[in-house]
Length: 187
Image (cartoon, rainbow, N blue to C red):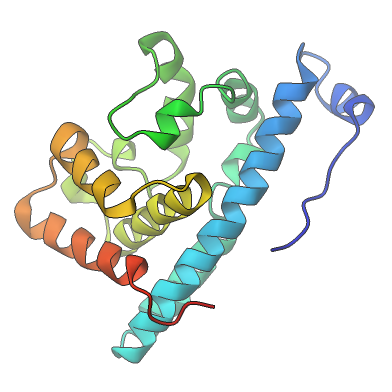
């Protein structure tokens, strides 16, 4: 994994004087950079599978999306400020049955609005593209690797308790998740 670049608290204060807790802001930055590395690794695994099965263009596009995954957390000032307020509520990311408190969900909605790999980005999950779905699966797998959670159980709980994708769509999601969860081509 790449080493993350850290900014001193003095530099963070200079860049964002309106932030009262610089530690939470720096934590968001570090967490995002670490997560991006896991997503790149996950997307690479799925991209190799896609290439082996003749979907070279999808593999290429997925790799491009991996590089810019969650960049809005670092480039959108409003999103950075909002997400730094909930960075310490990591349980909602570790446990698929848990959700942020309603008053904190508003902060996450900005991130969803800026990123089509989140089902919440859309009026209907059926509006997600194949690449949105692939990136979503890689995002979930990356979180599972980060937090050491049971990936396939996480996916089932998300389906049952939160998203309710149509059966045909969930079959595609489940297939990508099984590919990601397989021991094949681990580096």
